[in-house]
Length: 388
Image 1 (cartoon, rainbow, N blue to C red):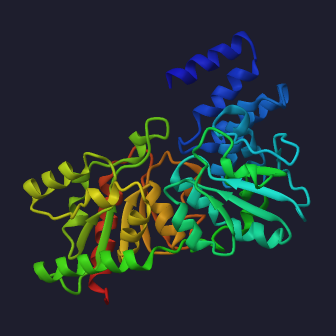
Image 2 (image 1 turned 180 degrees about the vertical axis):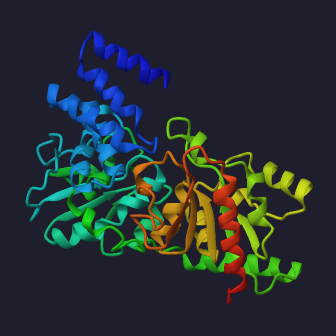
């Protein structure tokens, strides 16, 4: 509010595009995208090539579900530093061109992962559509090293997949595979946003690991007399300071009404303090939330994917596990704050990018206890009707 007041005062001194771009930015993830969109449009009227104005306006338009126009602006993230520019060379040793929809017949294009693991998983659902639209292109995927083996398994027909997208240098494989075009996976919705949810179950977990974790969880149920109950995964923190951890995270103790249901609960939380929090939960409330740091903190994300796949239901905040479960087309309930990112639509009950992700929204100024009580009530019904 103080920033908004200062920028509005600045406009009375000079109607400057930088100020308008900042006013536009203030409304990103605040739950009212329509309030920021006019500032972005005014910014671009004064300076059409304003990088931050284009980027912020794009975010607000996408958040407002104006996908066709919004994703056109999304490419400006490469100009602002919000999206990382990767280096790949063509046959003459020159930097590969950014793809802008050109014919790719006989050409090589690299699509690289970007931003967080969750974003990379979300954008990967559009890769099958890209392949259909460009059957004669040579596609190379440059992906997060933690997702490498899972993506290889999930896209067996893509021969060139490399775990190098986090590297700051031109990757070594570029010496033998020359690249004509490059783009981030986040650019795909510009061309294929109408195919949202079509391939939302593309991710294939490691079946052996899934069987392993299911076996461990069933053994726990046998030991504790919980056979026949659903296995429910839980994650309660999401994001960092820049990506609004303050809005996206919920104290674990607020989930007590949920954890009192007749289910076997397992933690999918990866933060270092999670083990201590689950211990406090048992000490103060007598509630078990099984937590295995060696699994959820493993750098090979195969383990987190498999443990999530072993659950009958996952309840979580807006965090990467939403995209893991959504990408496997598995039932997920996510608690979505009033001020949320574009990935969660507006007030949609069904997530706009996944078929299996149900959203419980927090209204503006309302405590988390209200949506959590609804989750607890719905979980009670789910447990009653559950059939192993």
